[in-house]
Image (cartoon, rainbow, N blue to C red):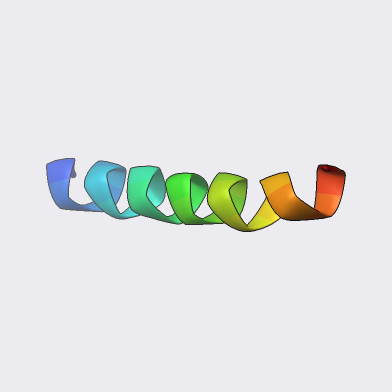
Length: 24
């Protein structure tokens, strides 16, 4: 369970980093 939570957090972090240049 914890492994999936960490994976989701990493995906969310990557998506936010990729999305910031698009928003800016």
